[in-house]
Length: 210
Image (cartoon, rainbow, N blue to C red):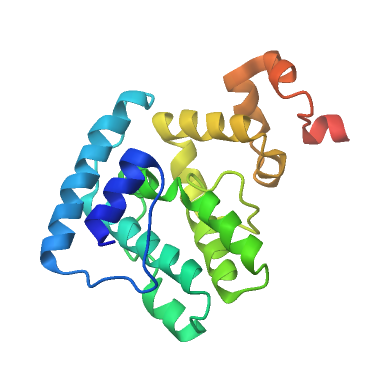
């Protein structure tokens, strides 16, 4: 499956099919993928809290190619660390709300891929790499246990749209560790108030634990 078909399938069906090796990413495929990513953005913004961050084509395309290679690497299983490092290169641009949201169009599927990879080989180099990228993109990785997070947390929480969606995801996933690890209790209460105890009975705060 080529990149554009891969992203289209992820967008419309929520699943993908892959061969053992990723196919070449030529200019035609990249341009076709950009169009699909723009369509994804315009449909997804309808469900996002306003005002929604703008679309960043560069970061969305990076996420699409990264995820494309990551899925193939999970399937291959025998790729060495050198190949993994070569194909899974980090994003080099500045991080802002538009970048975070555009990357999320693809990376919201990252937790499922991480769980699949971890189930196949928990100590694998690829699993470590996926955990690292999950830490770099906390907005998209709710439910994945991460050791630390970079400055993106501040960017998320300073943007009304991203903050609302992020906290909603944490509540839906009941990600207690994420809440306590990054001191997000007040945002949970801002969103749900005392009602949080009804649909998240096990929710605790540092204060109640003390």
